Structure formats: C-alpha cells, structure tokens
Image (cartoon, rainbow, N blue to C red; front, top):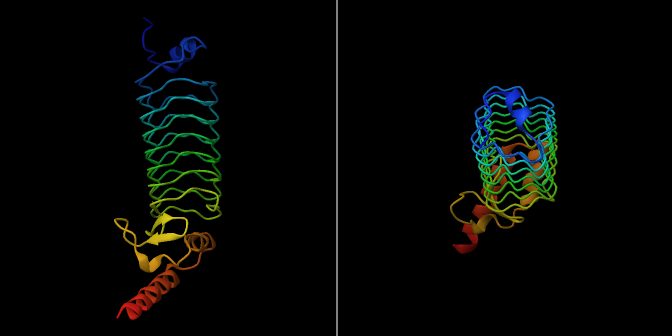
Length: 227
C-alpha cells in the first residue's frame, strides 16, 4: 500500500492514470498552481488556502473537501464532484465549473465573477454573500439554494432552474412565477408578481424599496378582496 503523500512533490510524483485516489490528504496552503490532475480523488481532503490557479481538475472528486479561502481562479473543474465541499471565501474567478456537482456546497463569501456554472448542480448550495457578477448559470439548477446578499449583477437566471431559491433580497422563489416572502410556506398574495421580473430588478439595480411597495400593494389588494 502506497504511503499518503505529505507534500505537493510527493503527490505529483505518485499521481498517475493508475493511481488517482488520495482521500483525506492534508495539503493546507499547498502550491498546486497549473498542475494537471484530472479525475483525481481528493474526497475529504484538507486544502484550505491552497493555490489551485489554472489547475486542471476535470472530473475530480472533491466531495466534502475543505477549500476555504483557496485560490481556484481559472481552474478547470468541469464535471467535478464538489458535493458538500467547503469553499467559504474561496476565489473562483473565471473558473470552469460547467456540469459540476455543487449540491450542498458552502460557497458563502466566494468570488465567482465570470465563472462558468452552465449546467451545474447547485441544489441546496449556500451562496450567501457570494460575488457572481457576470457568471454563466445557463441550465444550472438552484432549488433550495441561498443567495442572500449575493451579487448577481449581469447574471441571466432565466435559463436556470429555481425552486424555493432564496434570492439576494431575501424573497424565496417557490417556482419560476411564484414568490414567497417567508421561505416556510407559499404566499398566495405574491403569485402574480413575476419571479423573473424580480430577478431582472436585481440585475438592473432597481431599488428594493419599489419592490416592497409593489408587494405591499398586492397584499392590500388581496385584503380588500377578501374583506
């Protein structure tokens, strides 16, 4: 049985097409910039603050990996498995995450500017305070995801799948055309407010004040009709 690599040099020396499994490896603050590690298994690994810029991790297994504050700018993570990975405050600018599985991942405070998340699975992901300016989310799925205080300027969510997704303004989108002010249950008074219109308002910078006024008017109208 091969010994677990303790350094980057040992990892690169050991990694091959026949040996790609290194679960629970501990390489905090490691410099792996530009390395080619496709299909590597780094499940439950500890890579906090690691330098993974431009690293090729296509199809890699990073399930429950600890990647807090890691630098993954321009990294290739296409089809990577990042289920429940901790990417809190990680930098993923221009990263390729198309078709990646980020179900339940912690991306709070992360920098995803210009990242490609086309077709990515973000079900239940925590994106609170994340910077998603210019990110590509075409075909991505976000049911149960939390985007509270996230920056989604220049992001087109019209081709993404939403369901009980909490938006930056705190409003929960039950489905494409159904919104709920309280995530616990659907609010019938808001069903006529287009969810996509609310998304576009966030993108174009329309103030939350006008949104609150619109919601108040809908609630008042419903109250009048039921009185």
